[in-house]
Length: 444
Image (cartoon, helix red, strand yellow):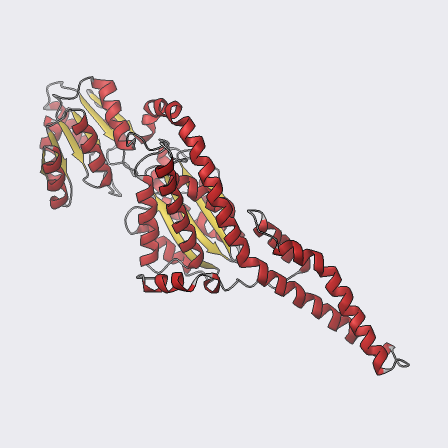
């Protein structure tokens, strides 16, 4: 039987130093997933990598073997021993996977409850895996249901009120540290979604002297025009660092962009003028050693926790409403997941019963010398009737409406009766229109 499996690390289980080593920016996630799917027992795969989590979602035949494989691959990718990672990694299966992803997409597992970016990040993670041809019916259903749940949470609750995000919290931190921001010169490094949210948050605080640096000049120019700043290239960073009062870095670079030696030269030319640097990228854009320089105040993603605490109490009631919605959607997904296994398990159970009857009759065929053909038919009918009555109640219970425990019950039943473990025809369980739609998608 195929099982859902997720392994990951997050801000709840691992420090930033470990999260940035395990992070899968750019094409790294696709490379790792292709390596996993090359294993015959990994049928589908997708990866979610954000500033606060790296998670690998799989459909597998042997979850224990898959856990070992993923742990080893992530450890090799991070350049550490698996034993250094094992205490920080979490592993979930089946409906617990769905509950976790639904909560992540709804913003309930974020450092900032209800944050704005996470739903888009989940959507991109799914689309990347789909385009690469790494997903199938189970992960397609899982991610689509998760995205629908996230949308429902944001529509029916106020959990995302105020467009709270890591970027807006970073700007709040800048205001807490420096006071009024209107006359401050801000340098934003990175013009992706996080950079855009940062520029918007600064503009809402009255900042008009922004400089946006990015490898894609057209993207940086667009942000500068929209939010009243200038744009430039990453090569202009040293000069702009000399002018800035505040720097917010949020690129997707796998390597640091601002090194200690470079910033030390900049600070010497600033004549003692302090510099506030907020690095919200994972992996980090700014060398942590920059914090040792006189005049530099450096904060990273984990340093935002104090500011985040303010939002938790305000959003507590909305988070509880969101959790109720997640549980409703989990019941629907669990029913679908359970339905995939019920009929194959019933068929396998009946097949095992028939096989036992056939074996028993064959083993005793030579013991009925005086029995007539009619007597032998009666013995066979009696044996089959006993078998059917024995399986009648388990069959009825399996056919009842499945819940989130149904997968576990099916697994126990298969183990107890030694049923053949073959994955169900998942595609055959999907509505025909949905299957056709998936096949039209690239990589589906």
